[in-house]
Image 1 (cartoon, rainbow, N blue to C red):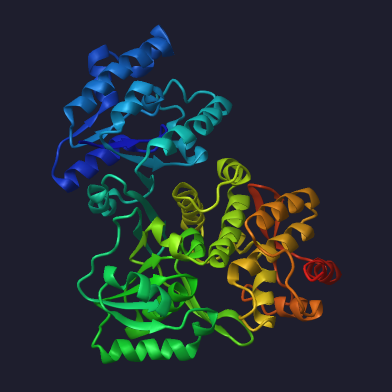
Image 2 (image 1 turned 30 degrees about the vertical axis):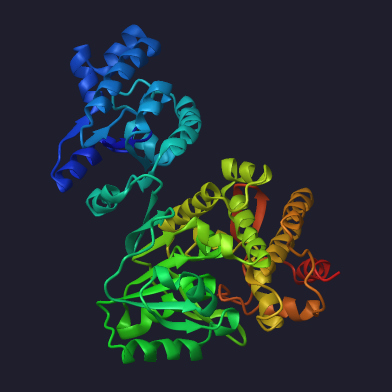
Amino acid sequence: MSLVLIGFMGAGKSTAARRLASTLGVEAADSDRLLEAELGCSIETFFDREGEAAFREREERVVLELLDRSVPVAALGGGAVLSERVRRALRDHTVALLEIDVDSAWERAAGRGRPLARDRDAFSARHAERLSVYEGIADAFIPSDARIEDVAGALAEVGPGTRLVWANSASGSYPAWFGEDVWPRLERAFVLSDQTVARLYGHRLPPVGMPIAPGEGSKTLATAEAVWEALASAGHTRADTLLAVGGGVVGDLGGFCAATYQRGMPVVHVPTTVVAQVDSAYGGKTGVDLPQAKNYVGAYHQPAAVHVVPSTLETLPARERAAGYAEVVKTALIAGGSLWEAVLCGARDDPDTVLACARTKLRIVAADERDGGLRQVLNLGHTVAHALETVTGYSRLLHGEAVALGLLAALRLSGQDALRAEVAELLAGAGLPLTAGPVEAADVARATRMDKKRLGERVPFVLVEAPGAVTPGHSVDDHDLLLAVQELLT
C-alpha cells in the first residue's frame, strides 16, 4: 500500500513527497517524472504536440503501473485522478490531498512550463471542477503550506475507516482524526467530562478525573477552580495532558483550564456533540461565562489533537442533536458552494458533513487565528444568540437553539428575506424553535452591547450577502436590531 499525494497543480506534491519519504526513511516516486522519462520529452512539449487526450492516456498507464508497485510514497500529477481506473486503483492506498487555494496555485504554476496554467479563467474553472474529485477520494487533508515533516507521523497512522485533517495556525498545528477507531490512547492524562458522557464512555477512557454536571451552568470560574485543584491534587504537571471528552461546555472549560494550569498544558478534545464536532472543538478558543455575558473569560489555546468518533452522536438526546444542526447551517452559509448545496439537499450531521464543516472552520482559523478579521465570520448569528443565552440565565435555551434564532436575526438584518425563510424552513425541519419564548426584546438588544467582540461603542455584526458571501464588521441600527429581535419573540 502506498501513501499517495494528490492535488491541484502548484500544491507542491513532488517536493512534499520527497521530504515525506526522507522523514519516514522510505522510497518516493513522482508520476510526472516517470512520465517524462517514458515520453522522452517534457510534459509541456508532449502536451502541445499530441494534445491532452493522448497525454492522459499515457499518464493513466504510468500511474497505474506506479500504484501497482506500491512505492511507499507517491506523488501524482494534478489531473491523474480524472481517470476512473486510477480512482479505483487508489482505493487500495492511503490518499492525502494537498490543499491549495486557486490564487496561490496560479502564483506558483503560471509561467512554469505547465500547459494548463496559461489562461487564468480556465485555470480557475479547472480548479473548481477538480475539487470535488479530490475531496471524494481523499483520506487525509493537508494544507499545502503545512510543514510536511510535522504531518508525517500522522499520515503514517491513517488506516481504513480513518480520515485525517491537519490543522494549521500561527501558534501551532495538530491532527484532527475522524473515525470509529480514533479514541485517544494517552499514558498520563487528566480526563475532564460531564457525568452523562462519563457514564456512557468511561470504559473507553482512563479514569475520569473530574465529572462535572452537564450543561452551561458548569462553565464558570468556580468549576475551573475545582478542575485546577483536582489537577494539582493528582500531581499533574504541564508535561501531562488534559483530555476533554464531551460537548462544547467540557471543551471550552477544559481548554481554558489547560491553557492556564501551570501556564499551559496540552489539551486533547474528544467532542461528543454536534456543536463540538462541527465547530467548538477546533481553533483554540477556550473560556467560561460570567453572569454579565458569555465566554467573557478565556484564552486562545490550540489543542494537541482532536478525535471525532461519529457514533457518539447516536447517544445524544433528540433536542441536543437538533440544536447542533444550527452550527451546521451556520457553517454552510459561511462556506457556500457544495456544503450549502448538501445542507439544502438534507445533509445534517452525517460524517461527511461534519468533516466538511470542520475543514471550513480550520481553513478560516489558519488564515486568522486571533479574530483579527476573517475569523469573525464564524460569529454569524452568535451576537444575538449569546445575548439570548445571557438574558435567559443560560438555562432556557441550548446553545444551538440560541444560534438558530441568532441566524434568523442576522439574516433579517442582512435584508435577506428569502434566504431567511429558506433557513427557517431548514431549522424548523430539524425540530429547532423559531421563537425564544417570553423575554424582553429590549433586554436582548441591550445584552448584545456586552458582546466580547465589541472594541468601541458599537458591536460589529456579521451579515450575509449570499451563501458563501459572509462578512464581519457591520454596524447595525439600534431600531433595526430591536425589530429583528422582536420578531423572534412572537
